[in-house]
Length: 460
Image (cartoon, rainbow, N blue to C red; front, side, top):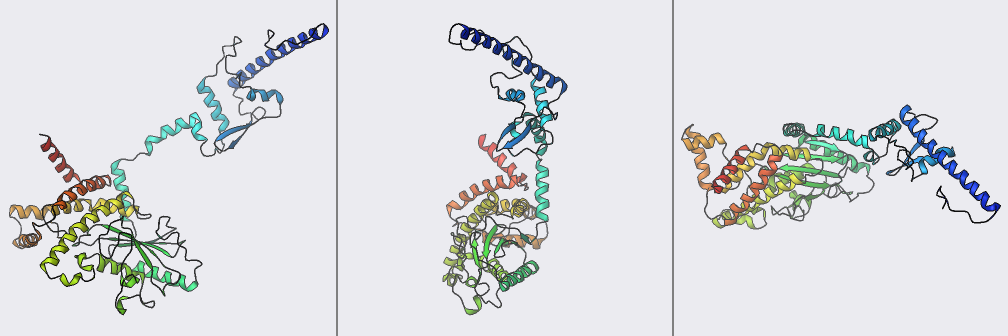
């Protein structure tokens, strides 16, 4: 190797002399090129000529990487291609020039101005990262803001509305084929009935893009083991509708909390053709409607004593054995209803997220109070007294009529033959509900204070 770092040329005489001359010429040219590179880099940094039209390279984005389209000037090309000797490195030739990282980022920023960067590229550019990090704190909301937003969305949640689609609908993959004009007209009629005549505690969403799909939720009625729970149903109008009834699926979460609502999601109802019944109870294409189906589920299925919905069990309704079995069934049903609440809170069905959050924010305190009341020995489904009524009863104050009514209500609700596991199971569910309701902004202060006091007493 010679002093310039090139291999020695083989040969003798004039050939060797010619090779030495060429090697010297190469060495001089190399030094001149390096000096030109450093000079150009310094000029570019000081005069901010990176974005000029004569020297700037156009930028292309392909996938997550940036690619440069080199200019035609061969003298400019090696500036990008030389991996060993970057212009801002020392280059071991006595130059102490270094480009400041901040200046380098600014040069890049100027070069990328007004360019539409593809997704993923932004994360690799330092100054964009800094801007993003400055904006992050402003994205967080306080708990009061979150609670206010939940309440606002809940208050404006319509009882009936249309949505674009249902990606999580149970029948989303079941196509009914090309819609017939008569079929579409009948479903539009069904929509108008639902919008006008839906009873309280039922909310419905229908799909604009899939007229055959419908989703409904029912709030469990007071005085039943289903009170304050949310029960979701997916329905589909088949291609043969209305000659045949709609098909309905219950979101059970794997729990059977009613003889008519199976763990697999089946809804057993004469009107749907899933159970036998008299002629007046079966589907009539001229008179029966989807509205009728929903009302039947609300009134006939989610009732006070669902145990007697089981075929043949109704004959035991007036016997002590039948009543005791029905009360035990209510205990289990309420526990399953609480589990269904947790299921809905953690995985709210599409388009009902605002209703789920707002409902449990509003009713969370009452549900927790009911859990406590039932754990004290009162029957599931019995009216839970308000705090004011309970205080008046304990102090012996208030009108005699209200106190008497409260006493008469509570006395028959207490029983000592309840399953031993009921209280322990409900205590576990209570703790889970307390945590979930607290996240949704429900008024849980009283129960959190009781829990803290209980923990302090246990630790003492």
